[in-house]
Structure formats: C-alpha cells, structure tokens
Image 1 (tube, rainbow, N blue to C red):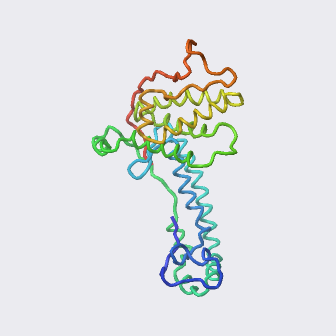
Image 2 (image 1 turned 90 degrees about the vertical axis):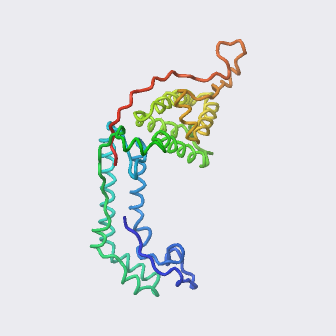
Image 3 (image 1 turned 120 degrees about the vertical axis):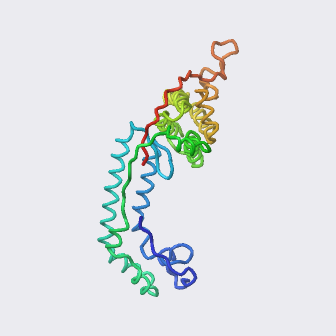
Length: 294
C-alpha cells in the first residue's frame, strides 16, 4: 500500500486562510502525497474485505472460504486487481503534477516535499496487489488447539452480529421495500457458505429462510408493514453472537407471526395461535475439514 510521508507535527500553523486539509494531514503533519490520489488503494483494500467476508471469515490474519466458492472469490479478486493496477499506473503518470500541486498548496514546505516525494520507481516497487491461496485442514491438531479459545463459529457469529448492528445504526426512513431484508439475505449467504464449519450455521440458514420467505411474500401486500417489524426485530436479536448461535441451534427465530391487518388477530380457538413461531427441523450437516485460506 502507499502512504503519505509525514513530517514534524509541531511546525505548521496556517494563518493565511488556506484550507488546512489541503496544506496538512491530520495532527499538524505534512502530507506529501494528496489524499485523493491514494484513495483507490484504500478502496481496493475495502473491496477485498467485502469479497472475502461475504462468503468467508477472518482466519489467522487472512481469510478462509470453502472449496466451493474459491473460483468465485478468485474471479472477484482478479477484477479488483485490474482496477488496482490501473490506479497505480495513473498515480505513476500523474506523480510530477501531484508533487507540484502539493508544493503550490504549501510553498513554505516545498523543499521538504520535493526531498521526500516518492519516485515512480518507489511507487512501482512499493505499491502492489496480490494474494496467496493455501489449503488448510481444520482437523490439524495445531489449528484445533489454537481455535479452542475462540472457535470459528463464534468468530463468524460476531461478524454477522456486526452486519446487523451496522444496518441498525443507519437511518431507515424513506427506504422502499422492507428495510433490513437485504441484510438478512446477506447473512444467510454467509451462513450457507460457512455451514461446513458448524452445524448451527446450517440451522441459521433454515431459520433465515423462513423469515425471508415470509417477508418476500408480504411485499406489496397489507402485510408488508407487519413483516417489516418482524425483520427489524430479527435483526435486533442478531446483534449478539450468542443469540445468533442459539437461533442456529434451534433452527428458528422466536418471533410472533405477523398479523394480517385486514383479518385481525385469530381467536384463541383458531388452529393457529397468534404468537406461534415458525419452527423448522434442522439436520446437522456433515462437516468436511478442507477449505482455503487467502
């Protein structure tokens, strides 16, 4: 990755009305390379995280995905790599102009900027994008011992809980459809892809399928508002890893079925109780031990 070269944080204070963001980086230090010129490389890092966390999980400083999704992941990483290399080529071509711009924005630091600016050779050698794919065996005694204190299922559940929490922290007003449904679908995709690690993730898939199916059926009907409340409640309940694994164990969410606003609440002697939960029997899948780490 590329980074701006930084100098004495105590020396510069703009008193001439210039935009400090253009003259300085944070904490009163000089930014040799403009922030905007380096954004594509930070965006590439975030894109890698998104791709590998969509159907994988963090694993010993890298990421782990199942054998079945390796071709898909490789294809997406190759696309990111192409964009990365294009951004690198642009940065190298634009380097003289970028340095001249920095000097014009902070002329009193011109000598420092020029003396410490990277060369195109520096950029060629120090900005790179690549990955290593290595097979792993979850039955390896060393891996088993290392994971005893922090099992993979708990790590994965934490990542899912973060997805739910991130969604709930954002304003939902003005959005069409059923807010949060796409998040449940994304969590379901992740759980399905990683279900070989722990049978509870397979149970979570079954539980999510029931909620997602009901929500999709309710779209555009009088039941949509009630279904949106159920989806929101499910996401609220998924903000804790322990709750996610408990749902996976049970194979169902303990939420009331939405009530049709036209039909009203069923009477006590109706065949279906108003507070009935959808329960789906879950067969614990076999757990293969091979996967790939990136």
